[in-house]
Length: 205
Image 1: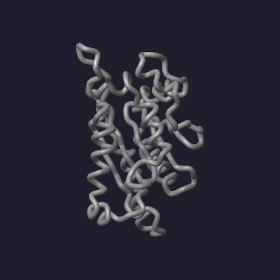
Image 2: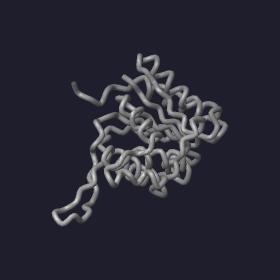
Image 3: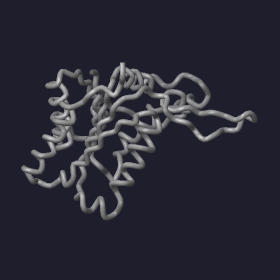
Image 4: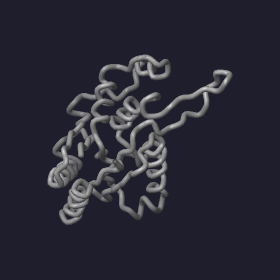
């Protein structure tokens, strides 16, 4: 398969970067091709621009958005690899989704007979498997105590991915990843490796 790994961290030599490397190694060992979208190193512009509103007027989107969409369309599976900040995506990754998963490409905007806007409907993307590998500072107990894991599921797995037709989402929250615990970090890197190695196509021929 062709796999797109979307990596978001300001420091490539971070532990999150090591998670990316382990995932890529696992996928490569399984015979997959991996393309890395390194948002910081590629200087992706995450802020919505006036030109991005072309999506709502059936006009051509900016070149950088079209390039990211073309890269996404080449993959059969994709991974999001990032640190958890405030129980969610970093702003850079959130901006990538905001600008790339656009109306008319990732989801559909429709109107009624009187031209009034209806609630958007999703599922314009072909089925793909999504792997989420995110490095969390907190413990699993803390996430459960405050409902953060369920909120994460609703926001990212359901509200973002499933909404656009990506229904097979495997999320791995790597808890307490900021601690200098070598055994724990080794365990997390093994999880990332297996996540890449064990990928199977979500599509049926």
